[in-house]
Length: 257
Image 1 (spheres, one colour):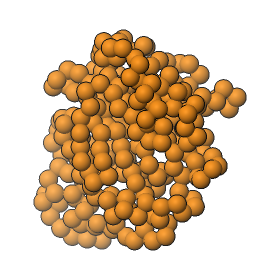
Image 2 (image 1 turned 180 degrees about the vertical axis):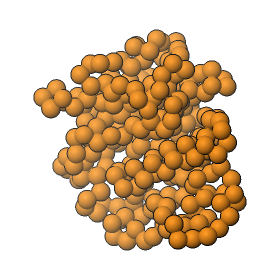
Image 3 (image 1 turned 60 degrees about the vertical axis):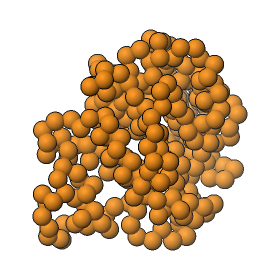
Image 4 (image 1 turned 30 degrees about the vertical axis):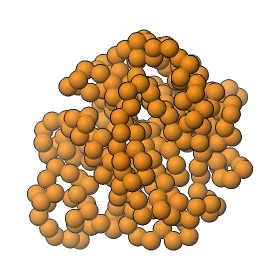
């Protein structure tokens, strides 16, 4: 890096470190130009991602399809990412460049904090850091490249799974049982409403509930991809609980979960 500044001024935040020293490296800086315009070709959209609580933790799941207008742009997009050993992020909105950059920056932010402080950032702190990054993406969001995440994980202090949702301005809100966003988010939420006492369900039942909600969303929404048994493409599922690392959780591929 070709800049000089006091690295201690940013504290344990990698995001602040880069923003203070070289803001041009952050995803939101630099004119998005026509590439950021809403409706412009080459910007894949369409998605359904969700999170729901169960007895021991939280399930985070998402479909794999992205669309460009009326055609399929990709059938194997990853929309659910492990953030660290106890949490994961699911992204909805214009994908690829802004979404992947935000997730990688968030993963680095958490790793940087752990190295500097010698301890994990609390789940509440992680949710706040992610809100800061979503807020920094507002200039691109105003040009059509909206990136809206769901953040969920296991809270070691409270001993339970927690779910956080965001708006495009970086507002952070907590859901008590479940939440789903994306083009098929409404259909998935309607499906989840029919599931009784999700929070009291065991892990396998909660995963099944999530997959059924994604299937219902794919049945109603053209932007959401259902399971593809011919190509072997299935939704991604990650778990956040005290005994499992969601960053290495098995995907729901071929009925493994």
